[in-house]
Length: 125
Image 1 (cartoon, one colour):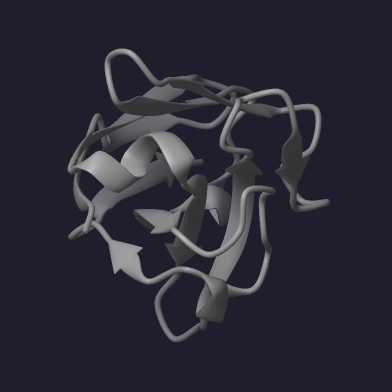
Image 2 (cartoon, rainbow, N blue to C red):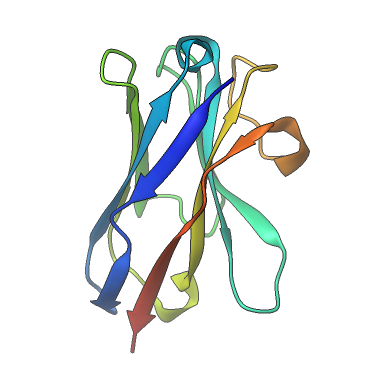
C-alpha cells in the first residue's frame, strides 16, 4: 500500500515556474515507479512525467519535455515535479501516482494503482 499527498499547486503567470511535491507513506514506495498525471477541464487524465524506482530513468509527455523535470528522493519518500516555462494549456489538476507493478515509468494510467487527491495548477495568460 502507498498513500500519496500532493502539495505545491497554485496560480502562476505564463512563463513562470512552479514545483509540485508528492509525499508518500507505505513500504511499497521504494519499489514503486512514480508518475504525475493531469486532468484539464473536460479532458482525460493524461500522463505528464514518470520516474523509475531507482530514479535513474525518467519519461515525459512530449508536451512538457524540456520544461518539466521529475525527481524522487527514496529516503524522504518524496517525488517532485518542477515545472518551468508554464503555459495556459498546462492548467489542470495534477495527480501523483504510484505503480507497485512496474519498476520503470509507465505512461498508461491503468498501470498505477495508487493516486493522490490532486492539486490545482492554474496558469494565467
